[in-house]
Length: 145
Image (cartoon, rainbow, N blue to C red; front, side, top):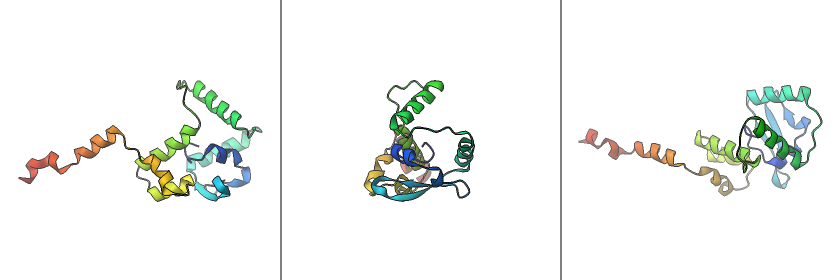
């Protein structure tokens, strides 16, 4: 979820036949039964290949996914009680945006109908504002005189 930005329901609906490890894509059924191809990285492809070789039947219930996420956080020593599996999607899309991903590409990846929905990931941090202001021409006014 962290690499793909999939919704919880999209992850739960994924089936083995939806995963193409050679092409490194997932066929995802999103909201409104809209399908989209989501690319995955080579590392994610390798992890899925390894997982598919040893996986056990998993309940497709949402509670089991949340419990798995909570247990993994606990095992990793992450102690943020309000952290949820849904944060993985938000984090993925926000990180992609801040690394320079095009807004329209993010819209397509996220499966959003409208670019307005995607704009929630455009939040700018104070650190980014400080970095941006460092490039202001007035900071180098002496070089123009």
